[in-house]
Length: 362
Ligand SMILES: [Zn+2]
Image (cartoon, rainbow, N blue to C red; front, top):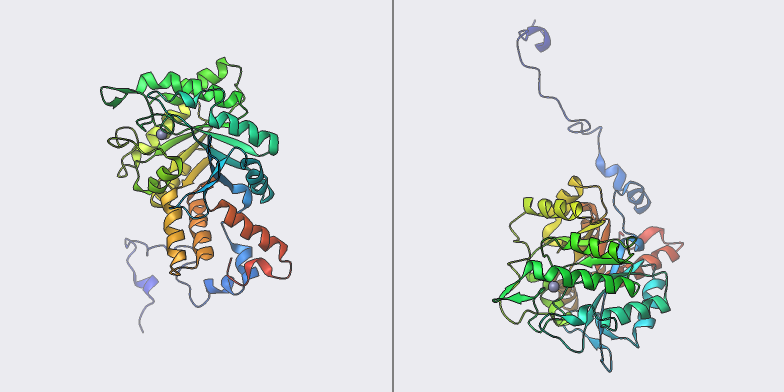
């Protein structure tokens, strides 16, 4: 008769490798049990989208006679000051808590003085939104590239963007935007030291209650292509790789985030989102502040183009992408899809007899 293995094994033998809890016990364990119906899946779903997660980007053109659709971004429009109130009312009606504003000035100059003009397009647009829907959050994108004749994000010195000379202009712009009523200031320029400069200027102007959402990890990305048409902000020479981050770097993103938080950022952003989900996850794990992800123009345009060709199910694919961004760790999603998604979410809530998207799995 053969001894059982436990008795026969010498006392010095290594213990068998531990089996992870819940793994390898088929047929007792069957994960499919919790996927059997939509209510069951809903019950155990770890990540869900809510209208309150979203910020919708808005482009407002100064002096434009009519609204202009953006060709590479179907559904996105350059609004006029006249059409803006109706647009923000419809955004608020979808339950979207805020917008991020990009201005297209009528005129540009070498230093971007339209950015901090009290009658600048962002300042006028902010006041118009606050008159129309006071509770809608206005996030003012803060950069000079839409206002400079050369299209770079700071002032130029010998053909280079001069970091330290740009900081006072950014700070002045932040104060002007906040005085116009912006609820959050979002610097996107990627100059070193800008968060500290902006915080200091806001505080000195009695605007210490206005938070800063810094574009902390903003990569030099080909995904911004359609935005440059929308915001008319393409650099007239060179590119932005001397100030935006290199796509190969992840540790550097943590360093940028750490620096911005040390300078007083209240919230931070990773941009773009979809090719940078690992960065979102790493930043989420390394910090406790609210984290935004910018689902950028090229990410949006690819979905719209594939949908227009009938190659994908636009609704399911959009929801899957945005769920992925949230699952990676984003608390706030800035997306051109926000109106579509929040419309779908509203419709779902109203469909009392259709248990949470039973028809389409969402
Ligand atoms: Zn810029």
